[in-house]
Image (cartoon, rainbow, N blue to C red; front, top):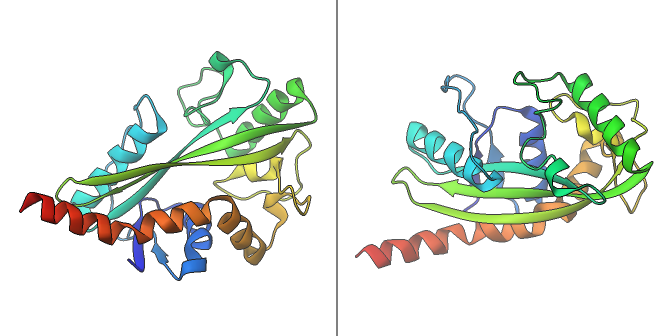
Length: 212
């Protein structure tokens, strides 16, 4: 498979996954901008459930395979019941969606209670759905360093990049050039994600044979 649709219109997320898959020449497209999709309520108990729900709905609507990725965030030194998990944007028991600035300030304060520089990880729940309802899933773990001193540069739609440091270079992820970010994402999630996408054709063929 050398082309995949990612289930989002978020330019920052499209660029993130496009950079991660560029190493193997896999072209990533976002959802068609001219098609309006009903809002999907992400009410799953896990990131994998939310990724699956989105991928299935988008795939049935478009009649094509769609890759959906949902994130969960975890910090060291934080008690399980206090972890953001899948509720990264649900802060201060609010039901509305906070702005990027509000989100950044919240996590600056949270990280500050744990230390100036702490370890954490993102869990990327990956799901590809097909129009017939079949799915293929995986989870990718990506360790990070988080700091409570915010970078002066922010990325719209991905505000927490301004609080994350790339360990090798010591640079804020938000301050990287697009080329540097591509290399970072290839290291962070690109290898397992490329392997997952490349194996889709083989998996789908096996599923077809199992049904015959």
